[in-house]
Length: 91
Image: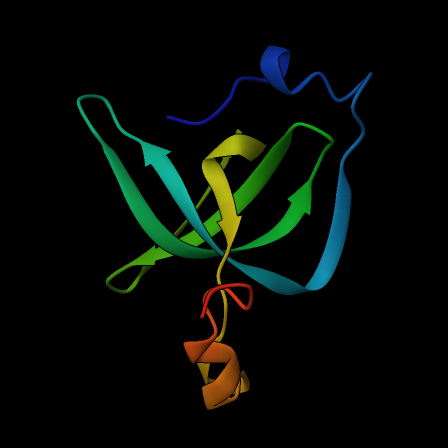
């Protein structure tokens, strides 16, 4: 269940596009549940993001509130030190 046109309010919150897509984890709401999915964001506003994700061979897109989206870190691009350094202030 994505956001409605009224909720998105493009007149006051214009959309922006970006390529390549930004890897994210996003909460997607369905009728009776919500699921955390790996997806990509190619469009967003100040308060929402359009998430693209796959379920098997099918690709879906839906708008969700920006608070339902977090950037996904690509662990392959990080060094061992960065992966192990959870809090550089702790000893």
